[in-house]
View 1 (spheres, rainbow, N blue to C red):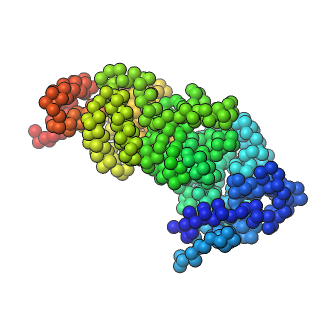
View 2: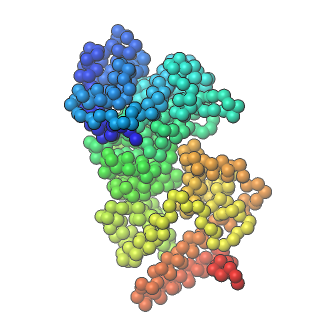
View 3: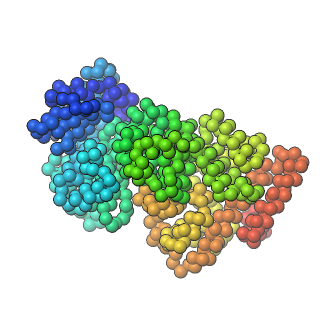
Length: 587
Ligand SMILES: [Zn+2]
């Protein structure tokens, strides 16, 4: 899609001498590792304009103009992005193939609109009286404005001032709409998407602002709101701070993955710059690929509570699928990276990163601590939870090590485990992202369409159902992807992070509600159904396995089958009948 390949742009940026280039326009004086000059943009006389060669960026502390060597040319000389890249490339002696017949990038107006809005939001944060609440909030997070300014943080006023400001700059409403900065209300009028929020600019790999994450100030929902997907902003394909972190990632040969924007800021400001975060959602395959382009090893640094651990292991599986090495760092209970660095500094964080363990090992630790390996059924359940991680590991050596380790931990023969990994892995792989709710093995008329849905309706009822459901059911057990996404986001209080399909599912469920249904009965049925489905799968697996076993091993598998079957009958007394009906509808 883009006309100059990303890696060429990257090469140009890295080769560019930003101090030399900007030094042609202003007189730079060294101060420590940075350079200062009077600002060429607002025309001041004091040295408020900084060039930071280590980061390849510039920033003015008065007018808040900021960016990299390319944006400098764009703002100073009025070039568009590709022209600026070509100009810098010419100076550093990199040849860029001539522009093809496609002409200029049609998305150029969107980039310009978002950049203009980003500058305006940043100025509001510092100057708008209404933004006092945002400035205070930044202070309560123990950050000072001086520090966050160069990072481009902004404030979106509650008023419609954005519309006038952008009009003044000649940015058309349609462009703002397409860029996701405006929304059309039901009555047809236009309103800013972000109102009364602290804004974190989100950059693409070329360090262009393409969207925002906005945190609400004071009461309100949702807590975090992102730009919608636009031609330049794709939530699942961007990582917060990657445009800065990628250099450090290459040097450190590792990436640190955290959950929140503030975590990124804190860790990065503490001098550990190889830190990125997904944009309020679970990590996607595309994001995992992005990480892989810059570092071979990822350390997951999420909260240590239940939702944090779930998110950790889901991200871990995604990263393993891309062949990355994955470790998990464990924060003390109740801490997040932000609070930890505030208390113990970068050194305290480094300690924790140093103690990071492999993601599978961490899973085993947790299962062990919960006593899973103490009993036979417990070991089976533990195995069920470890299998997805083994299967996710695409790197053959990692997979081999994982199989050996799990065989040892669960007391299973290695060859049996190997077979299980391949057998159940096949079925899993066939189920694509477009899969729908699997047909219920037994008809349960009292339930709203499916057990998965019933669990979600209960979850959305709030406490005590929310806690009961999240304790009884692991999100991985939900097979319908949007339901799984809703389950996780409600459990984690991160509903805004949902993609479009899941958000629709969420809204429908919200609208439906429990109605006249009895929550106790619904809970019992749904949880039993989920358990029954798990047991049924286990039976299928045992059936798959049986023919390949020695006679004495077969005997023990048959005993195991008996046990699973009895458990299943307990959970669902009509199991046998339902099965027979399903198998032969005519009888
Ligand atoms: Zn300035």
